[in-house]
Image (tube, rainbow, N blue to C red; front, side):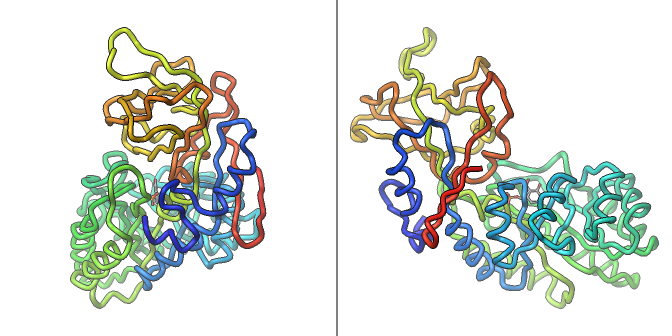
Length: 400
Ligand SMILES: Cc1ncc(COP(=O)(O)O)c(C=O)c1O
């Protein structure tokens, strides 16, 4: 967690100075809400550029699509990975040039491919023949990245079975793309919140072999997309970003030493996760008949208004509470909706102070990624997650 100290992180509270100042000044603000420090995004962007200097950054908009975040990254020089027509339109609306957009979702309506091409997007990703044919028909002369399957080992949020093709199919798709006059590249994603810095080794070895084979046929790749997967700081420890950079640079040198094309990364979580803190309130503390050991602590935020990634207890946020931390006991953490799926952590072993009370404020740290964008519009009448953006430079506070 230490590198974030550069933006004034308080090691005890886990809050940056602008976030702490905002929370201190808004103790009566109705919860839940997300406070997001734009300085952290700038720091994380610089750290990623330092770790992988040869790679062009395409921020995965889905992680946090707020215009404040997109504008900050646009000013830092980032490009953008978009998943839908909606994300393309949002990027264009705030003045991002279409050449800086890559349509990375492998599941696109053909009319959305046509729309993207019409507005100037020229980079697409596919992992199936029928998807490639949409690009061939609607986006002549574009660059198409063929996504290779990974098994997601080492990732807390794997992106495996649903995506990617095997190496034989990738080669066939690339030959077809080249024959149709498209530029081509290879892409993969090692799974989100990837905690193993060596997870890129295997796909890079596969991609190296694939590109060698294609080169022997006279086909030269335009680029390699290393995907996302770089972590935020949740309960389980993760290596520092530098270790990812070292491992990936070594794997690139070993397998793609002479590669002259572009290298892309598509980080989402790493750039925005640690920038956010969700302020929430304890609505109820009770005991359930079948579990007399743990208290059930119900918060005013849950699975449906921002904490979707607690599904299967996959992403385990750090929790900050008032009270006596020396005297803690086991809890089940749950959300406020009338839905029994809305249980956040039951098996993960969370402990909270025994003197925690209804009405206390509870902070969920490193919640800047995949929270506001997952929040439902009106489930049980709960509002979408409100967001406030702060920064040390201009003391700006914007509600989105
Ligand atoms: C195609 C694609 N690229 C990039 C990302 C961002 O991944 P991460 O947030 O792990 O960096 C995702 C996440 O779902 C994705 O689907």
